[in-house]
Length: 431
Length: 205
Image (tube, rainbow over the protein chains, first blue to last red):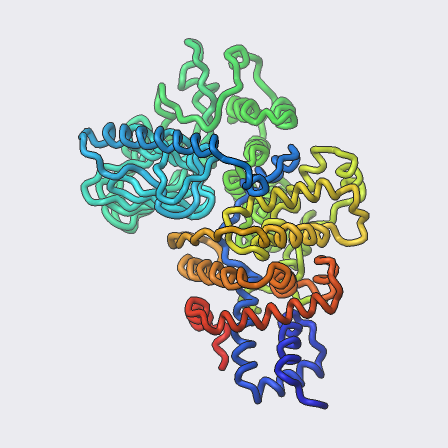
């Protein structure tokens, strides 16, 4: 057996990293490495780099941007980068105009929020990647008000007297009143002592006076200072101190608000507009219900005969998700209506709208609530699929699939689950 | 057989019927086909070009090329391998264009992340990942892409040759030179040296 030179050892090391070295070649390589510190060092460096390049850190799972890319490709559009040579005067002008409008709005927001003519810095993007109305903000760019902001990666907004860290996929809007409206996801707030600050969700408001806390649409966790949690109609839910955590009741499920019907016959508290009734929760604030989406329900529809689940399915097939949810709201709690079917159809409507993070939460809730049923089993598998394919959360998907395997050892998706788990390879601790 | 961590994909091969309908111009079918493979394309592009704000444009280019090339896809190779080939071409083309790599934002820590490495690890790994790609920027695009197809995406040298339309010898040479050049750059790089040392990878002497 002849000894290797460094050049061939280098080739073989690449092959070895990819697991493509025969046993005798591996032995010869090891012999060479024993006597060659340079090659040993190179192997260590390149093995580490290969691992880094092979498994990039979880930074930018951007399902939304892939969806846009697909939509544009289907429309036959060339990417913007491919058209980069074209003059961009108009685009620049638009950006400047947008920045100007943003600056004016920010100034007004601050004045309205603080009641002073002083001009401290307004809301801006401190770090990360955030979209406002489909346009990605530049670092340190002023954040527009009353526009939905979507954090494409973990991002930080700098607000007067506070900073707001948004987890990936979180959707918020900055209101003119100075409140932050959390529409989806999780926000970490750090507020300077003495600064009034509030985060509003669909069913509660968390108000603080200098603290550090985390809000999701269903919970508040406090790390420092005090946070009061209020219902939208002004009743105090809880007063939390450091280490406290408050959550909506577990059986509540997602909070869904039906569309507002601007007629005298449709009172906000009526079943057709007040959304699902949740035990232990007050109704949405009369006259100012939070809406998740525009309505497609007409006043005539509100007084139509009781819908059936078949109507909901038909609406979903027609991709009329808002209408489907409005029908579900009318159906919830009605006699003879299966709760699990209502839940599943609601989750399906979110999935069809590509609100995958919310849909996953719903499917998990269904799987927990209806454990041992076919619907629960399907919901768990669907959650794993969305985590894997849509959200890029491979760790979560793996855990969900393993949970499925534990709960449903002879389940109908077992083969597919095994196939997916097999593709993940061994658990990290076994590598 | 490839080691498990290098197995590609995770997406089921589309059926003949789906491919046939997509080739025939069924928009819904084409959309579904692309959606099913969007994750695969995103992962491949990210591994080939590193962190870039142009990822969406690159993916759009890949999807556009895939739609145009569908009538020519005969099914000789797996669909995802075919997509990897398009990704490699699009990445090479993009890497040849003069561009400015945007500074990487240091993302905030996320102590509530429920999966994966801890937030601070992820931040460090992101910085190291970005740095590694800055070093790879100094390689020629074909060497870089060949190296990453092999090392980061688990393709054999023969597969790399097929994906890049080169001979096997050329593919092996590109990977070998890329490996040597990257090692020379990494050896002098403080960021990567620190990261490798901290993570216990590559501290062998």
